[in-house]
Image (cartoon, rainbow, N blue to C red):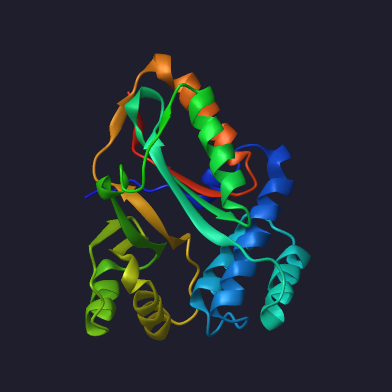
Length: 238
């Protein structure tokens, strides 16, 4: 099927001088995940996945530990999820996911990224229906064994792909925990290249050469905002 997905790392920062921003974004999402789902990675599979991803992105151990420790007791900052939708350069569809302690400020900052690049921020639901929210797992394995394990656990698998030794599993986002538990229970400790929930476009929108520079500027502006966690889009180089 060849469904396109993007690594969260690419959404968070593109250059090495953005490390501090990456650390801050990971610190925030780790804190929220631990506060909402528990401090123990063994019981909080979402937290476990975040920790593994943070380590791959070379986030220092003390940043990870401090974020989780901060969540202990449930005190501290109150972040809420904010999602914005709209149309980027070349008319591509865009979803911007944020964690914010000040929705008014965050909306203003995100809106400015749209307006400064001659794009249009939309209303809630304006483009969301053109994306599927899927759990994605990428790891080494054999397709038949993986599919058997997931079906045995009654996981609703959307798609599964084999590329050499690499397996990519797509499932509805509501099946994330069930799918991950089934994989870990069957295959034991695993190294996931990708282990997350993403918005995948139902179709892509070619971006012309003329719009490419503005599109990159648009993404950079969004990724520079501390509140922005992920940017999903359906743009594709022409």
